[in-house]
Image 1: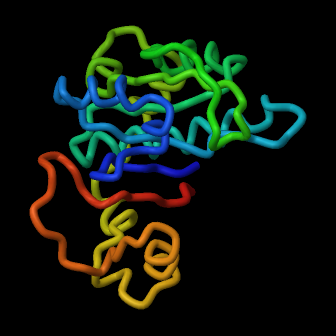
Image 2: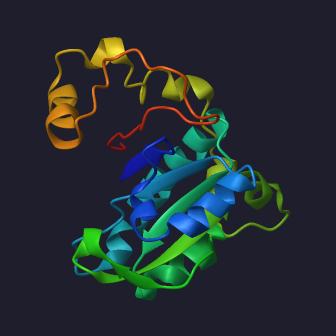
Length: 186
């Protein structure tokens, strides 16, 4: 699982849903895209516990960094799992997604604060609310600051692939955006 905090370059889902994500941004939503949710196992049920643990980290990362919504893009056959277990809601029509070999994708959104404030929660949100993570759990965990990136393989990759220098001290940023944050979850 990877977490991508919204940034001036956008999110991966912006490649197919820019209009819908921009509308959420205009409404004041601060977005976190959770990606790389696929599991290669034949029996997906064996990975549900691990997914619940990783999603708990994503939820608390979003809460501790003042984000309002988690967005994901999933195959249509997995939509009901995320709706039923977490309370995600569809926010745009399905389409084909070039980043996953043009397979179909359905964009889903979880409103963090509203979702966790309900009296009755879906199983995944209930697990997250009943097992909180302190802000200290994220202390410098996802912080790819320029001084940390200087001379790293990540900086080299971003320069070569996107002509982006993450070590440069940024100029004025668009309100509400930081550099893209990505990290392998535990």
